[in-house]
Image (cartoon, rainbow, N blue to C red; front, top):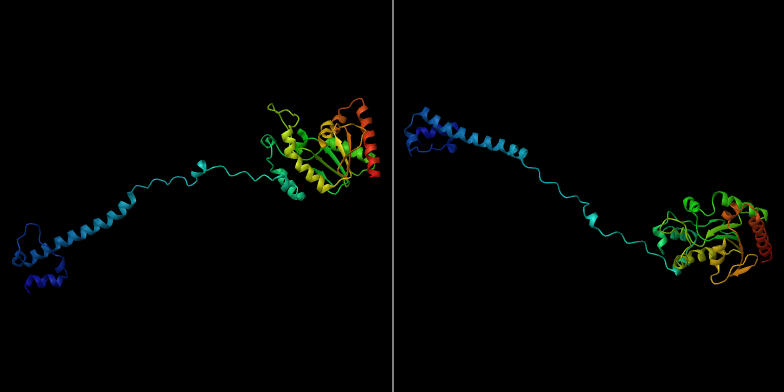
Length: 283
């Protein structure tokens, strides 16, 4: 081994050296030791320098690498998604099999007619679900829709007092409801009479209430309720009619009685209630 090779081997850099560009082969062996050291140091420095550039460049490149564009909103599909399917509407047979809780739930989400699009709420019956007296109105008023209960406020107080006068406890013997559970409105937002289709769509709910309640006496409140409970039969005040096993007596709606300044309607209503009481006692 030549002296130069021994020197390089002792320095531990033998495998790393390389000739400068343009150096002739074999020139290294003829160079002095100091020159060889300088010649070897150059490529070592270059190699180290190149490594340093690579090591520094890597984190720098990572630091300045462009941030990828944000992924599209994962919920964007929601805008184009079809609306959820409406709740399945119960058939007449389904309604006829409901218990009280099921009936209340079904009325709350009913969409059997167009009234579901304009209503502010439904009005289910209230009172004693084992009561033998049924007070029946036609459809909810604005106050009833707002309160969510049949015959609230002054109307209810007047009816309670009327029943108390004939020894009927409104708190334990009476159930109050409507033939329709939604308030019919026209395009101007004013109350109107229900259509035949609306009445027919809501009738199964009333019939189920009637089947669960099984009242002995029904007092209809107002002309429309009296006419609608037995379609095709002309209602007459002062006459007892039959709906199944229940006796039906017509009288005025409490709202009308509150507006009666002459007292004539109240006197007639008292006669209606006395007729209902006597009929109930004999049934």
